[in-house]
Image (cartoon, rainbow, N blue to C red; front, side):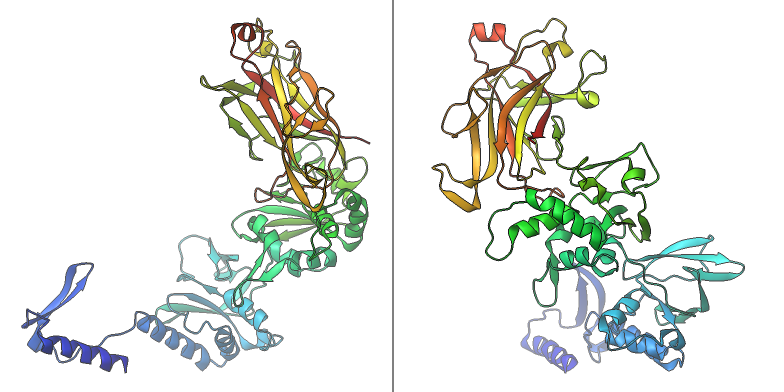
Length: 529
């Protein structure tokens, strides 16, 4: 029918006189003539859909599989998975019927998994150059194809009949199907031995449109579902999950949510947010430090992961543990320290030029031997730096800013700093003191001379450093945070920030006695026990 319509349309064009060069027929592509002939040499014109030939070749491949008595079940599985039109220009690693006897065709999820795990989107012959190569299937799983003793093996499985060329594709007949290997995401959401963690992750899967789904945890941890990125995860058993829940729950108060128990949800997030690492962990090391995507530092892995059962997965490894030791009293709810030069959490400056200073002389105790050097721009009126601070808990803190003196890079520079502090954080009441159970974002609350928080509209006290030592200056004492604010990746919002503003004036006496350039080592939040 489509061919008839196109032919009729062409004849109408000719008859209407639209075609001026009536003695010739031309075909154009991107403005260039790719074919031309005399009109009188044309008997008929046939128009084909762009996928006509790929579909035709796919049908040839499918018919070949169906005609082989040993491959009829895999051919059925291809149709059930709706891949019968996707068999052109591919390599099919087809398992024989007897090896698929345990596969229920009614289990469409399993059927599609097997099919996509046995088709590669390129043509691969066993006569390749070299001894081995890596094959990537439509499932994105990678399998080693190697030659040994005259045979070719795929992931250790014998290729029963190699190199059956059909249409534009290649079929290899396998003695058994490839073992499907889970990645970290699949292991968390489908594996066994960690039901509470699995239920939590799967509860975040929502249907978006049609049959497609989204998962906000996966959005933050997208790398654990990538076959091309190595990662590691610590997975708690159900007993370890319950133990951690009991310990963390009091520190995980969260804004009210009418649709869920927000503190319960925050506690579950707290259990897992320190568990993910980019790169592979080595549980045998005693002196290495591995940093989780939350910023948590796993020190002495051999001790912290003692007794863990290691599982190798396609994109990394996981450590199944019966206790999350990181939440024991000796490790839990300790100081939060943000190195001032760390830009990973969204450090911002206004009217400052920032550089990183390095120090190795040993006179001053500067953490990581680095500090942030802030030089106001020439036209600056109010130079400010903002330090977002993640992973605060619903508990009480003393907040400190550690300053580095000017003598660190100039022995004659003893000028002190003059600064003002302000904080932004999520409170449970607004400015007038009205309770806001869903949370109220306080923006730049100022600090008085007694290190107490005051309303943003009140001017902050001016604090002056001693100009001679690395000074751990108290900013705010006994700051009670009503809600936790946990961080797992750069997609997690941070609602707590400390602002440090240069308070040095522009008069001659001010510039003579105080430094316009400020040097900061780190920000520290110490829990008040």
